[in-house]
Image (tube, rainbow, N blue to C red):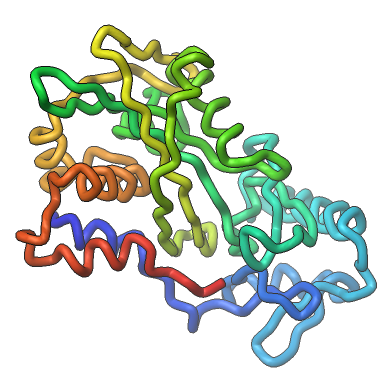
Length: 285
């Protein structure tokens, strides 16, 4: 499967199957039309009109909205409509730099189709003038995509944490890298996609970081999340990303971005323009 096809598979969102989720006249999410019946029982919380689901304006503070939505999420979990996993919360807003209207349990992000953010780290080294990239394999006991290949470290961005802080935290936890090394990581780009799943809508933007590691540095896996790390020459990584389905879907996009920035994917590729464009295309918020 080509690089472009893999990007397109992460952007299969059909807006016609969703209602806008609106707070204070701002769209903050997308709720699937086939899930709306479960919210009709809460007309004191949600108003329905003009293909929009609007949060009751009487919920006029961050604290009121957060508590109310959390209570709704608990009811949806009782009905097995939302999985009960994770203890992180995501900020809900119309854009990254806009004020947060409330926070929501991470497990409910897709149901309400809120814009989410993550941080992903590419770890690489140089040997004999060539680039080699450290790739993680997700722990085999994980419920979500066990054994898939992943970036050196990655994680969703919880409410109240800056991207740099979250990236360093994830790298310490998953690869056990020292703070001294992590001071050298550099923000390089963002990658966005808009995926539709059985849970709902997943509009996501990833803050992408690079860290050049000394050749003698070997990341140590945290067995709770990472099974092992493997060092790939960039030429082999190109083939693995392009020809196989071994990577976690969003890590694939981060790796394509890395291959572009390090000149492994060049304008000689017939899809080059579309590959670059579609890595950052979704702008529904």
